[in-house]
Image 1 (cartoon, helix red, strand yellow):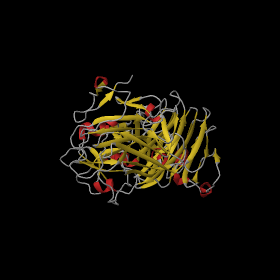
Image 2 (tube, one colour):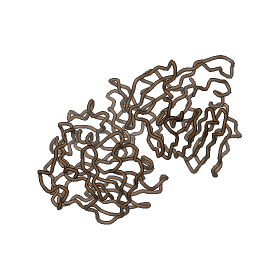
Image 3 (cartoon, helix red, strand yellow):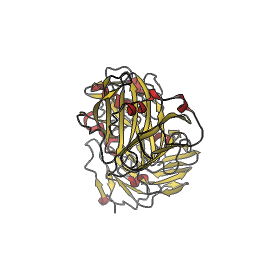
Image 4 (cartoon, helix red, strand yellow):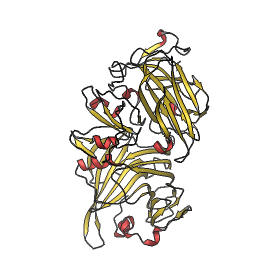
Amino acid sequence: MKLLTVKQIVLKSIVAISFASLCVTANAQTLSENTTGTHQGFFYKFWKDSGDASMTLGTGGNYTSQWTNATNNWFGGKGWSPGSDSRIIRYFGSFSATASQNAYLSVYGWTKSPVVEYYIVESYGSYNPASCSGGTNYGTFLSDGATYTVSRCQRTVLGADGFASLMSTYYSVRNPKKGFGDISGTVTFANHVDFWKSKGLSLGTTHEFQIVATEGYQSAGTSNITVSGNVVSSSSVNSSIKSSSVASSSSRSSSSVSSSGQCQCNWYGTLYPACAAAQSGWGWENNKSCISKSACASQPVNQGGLVCGGTNSTSSAPVSSSSARLKSSLGVTSSSRSSSNSTLIYAVNAGASSAATVNGVVYQADRFASGGKTHVVTNAIAGTTDDALYQSERYGTYNYEVPVSNATYSVVLHFAELYQTTAGARSFNVSVEGKSVLSNFDLFNAVGRFTAYDQRVDGLAVTDGKLTISLSTVVDNATITGFAIYSSDGGALTGDEPECSSSANQNSINQLPPEATIVVCENR
């Protein structure tokens, strides 16, 4: 996918856009000629060098595309102009090509001064776009629950002034790459910018545009993508953010929180080291990206925060299932626990008539609910390798009341949007033992459709013999796909448990770190 001619470079650059192409329309429109503009609040760009590729602008951040082998090279998508170093980008929909087709879905943009082209490649087919001839590999880093391989490719281009110059393209390629068909994900762009900077790969001072693009080269396929995102301030401090008790499996082995007071930042569901020196924004310390405490605290309430050992506060904070699994969340020493051991009490696969096993934990068929209805899908779930837990839901306004002994508990709640297709179509409240966990929560806006999302809450003192999880509808229906209950101070299930009636039917999960012990029932 090399674009070597002056005409092609000019066409891909936003600099050459005419005012005639900047018209705004509220109606869907199909593009088959090279153009750029705005549509229903989103910037769009469409370019091809030949053939029949076309792109249709849908509602809001949505677009569809289709192309055949008659097109040599094309790309198009929706997003923003200007781009931003600190935008969190979300997408969902479908990306339909095959492994034998040369196509990819990526966050794509340009900057000026200097001119730099960049790709964050989420999915690709027969050709890894970072494997350019003569390219330089800069290693890997973790972001949004995946490993990204970074490389720089360079080519000589002829500018409008007639002089040749060297142009750089930066690639961050996701591993594992997203599959074809239904697709969704989140890209925290600042993570990529900071890693690039640490390797001397700086972007230009001016962001021209930033889109979620479909691209094809001598291939055929279709896409239907909806884009959303928000720019996160790294300077404002939200004092309402408290320390949370969440850990990421990607960082637990090397940098888990200790009782000595070392802090990390749960950044929109992904755990990163908290900077020791940097006072604002992102930094690079000890050969790793880090987030300043002020930037970490700037996230909206219930979207993340500092994770510190040896503190006295407890709160809930979300963890994307793609970046933090249940076992890793047990690897944090939290002051809300009376000891370093955490034992599974019971787990429920909401909306399902059968059990599901996740990381060795058996989530039993749905029970202990009062109210609500159930719904099951077969769609693949992004952000997890354990689809079954996220393919069934209980929805409506309802309670779960689990009979347990009076003790202190932690609960991990599991969610996935299995029905709605736009932001604002569903919002709901969740509380556990009277503690508000989520308020006016828009699951689709947080992670998109068919994407796993986990939320943990600690320090739940049960005094009435039952642990109550309450879900109430604000718009459409509240929903949950499952939950697991833990205790570190002797809590126990006290009600009927036919799935596991004797200690002889229990197994210890040996794969967990030594600071966490789980006992679960055999899956039979």
